[in-house]
Every structure is written in C-alpha cells, then in structure tokens.
Image 1: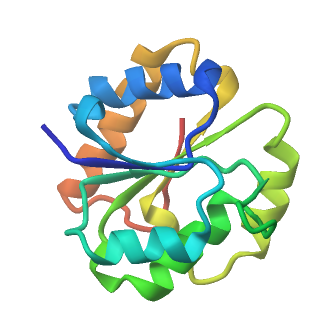
Image 2 (image 1 turned 135 degrees about the horizontal axis):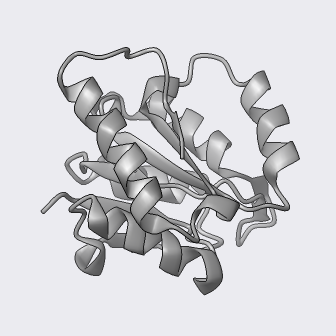
Length: 157
C-alpha cells in the first residue's frame, strides 16, 4: 500500500469521501500520519522534515486560523513544503476544495508561482459523491505521469 500523510483534514462530511477515494487508489488511509486542524505550518514542516516523503499528501485547501491565530490555507502550506522540503518534490498532493471555497481557491491558485502544479490533484466537493469516478480519473492521471505523460498539469477530479 502507498503511504499517506493527512495535513489538517476537513471535517468528516468531506474527509470520509476523500479517504474512500484515496483508499481506492491503494493509499493506506488507516495508518496515515495525521496532523490535526490548527497545527501551525512550521510545526507541520518540522514533523515532515523528520520523515521520509510519503507517496501522497492530503492537504485540504480550507482557510483556517492555526492555534496561534495565523491565517493559512492548503496552498500556502503546499508552497512552504515545496520551498522547505526538496525531498517532497515528487510527492502527489491531493487537495479537497469545498463548494464554499471554490472561488477563493481559484483566486489563490492564480496568485501562486513556482508550485509543482503537476503534482496537485484538486478534489472538488461536488465530485466526491462518486468516489469511484474520481478514483478512476486520478488513477489514469497518475498512471500517465508514471509513464512519462504530460508533467505540466495536475488533475481536477
């Protein structure tokens, strides 16, 4: 099974559907490292620095305040991981985005530069009602990349 780190997961309503999708992609969701909501970005970086890069990171987009009151989101964390942890450069990032956050996500994504977008796989909440379909789309994208497919694009599942 593939290794997975879950960083500041969404609440159960989305998390359950995302985990089902990732389970279909052979990720070991039952033994994933989980960093709880509210964990500051740098605390997550320090935890990840001590571990070998997993096969996948689950990094929800949702904007939140960490336990110190600093506002952050999944794209900011992904950018920090990209800068601070070169060993994670080839790790696929699965980023659920809730219906409510779609517009904010698009605006934030457009302002990000230098992110490894080819490793970013967006999981829209409205699509998660059909985890089999989402998993099939992701499986095809991941297989294409493994075979040398277009590294310039991620997946919007």
